[in-house]
Image 1 (cartoon, one colour):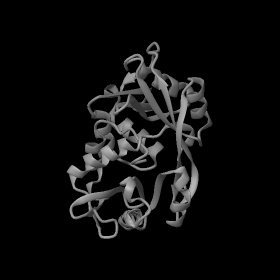
Image 2 (cartoon, one colour):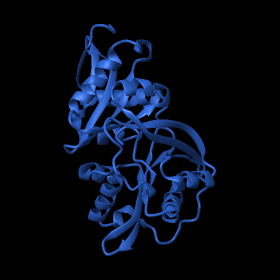
Image 3 (cartoon, one colour):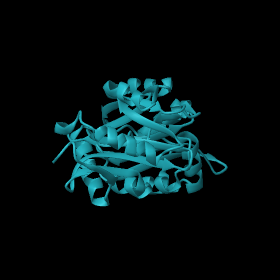
Length: 283
């Protein structure tokens, strides 16, 4: 293992499972099926720094079309941090997404490092944690399987800012997950949400809705179907005051925050509809 003699190459599929294990060790609490879903979205966008065949660090740089990309899964072995590994991984990620507006959810105490790569602070995303008390299932909320897929894809593209058809299809169909949607008539949605099993509890994400009332109903629809006493996590963008208020009204505890940064400009997203992002790793 040599921190000064390594190469950066495309990640092998088997290494994705190791990257997720490293993410878990960092406290990022990945979903049980994140590795498969993330890699299947854009397998060419994952990179490994290796020496003598041994992985030293990982990063992802997934593309959403020709104009947008997202960098995540940035982790280096703890004992090798402070060397060139992180810098070279970062360069590989940026080269892969060259010409695109790129987003990241960075560690707050590393903001200056990201700024050196040309990223600018947009806002904070904060992870909140609660313990499920199994609320009564609300009316007017359907299982995600009952929602027209085109409507789900349309609503997701509006809130995420880019179409991600294959990703959403895999996300809502993954094992160990629950989904809910508000059907608004006319083949439209008023919102949708997913909960997926993670190493510790469940993560709610995305949680997209027209307003706080619908977001609360979607959240309750998921919690009503999850085990009582189970932990759940919601990653809330601080650009949506109603989303922060929803987390606080539910008595959720803020666990940590990330710096959402972009190398060009913050996308023009409907912030009032984003109550929980999909993931810190892929945006």
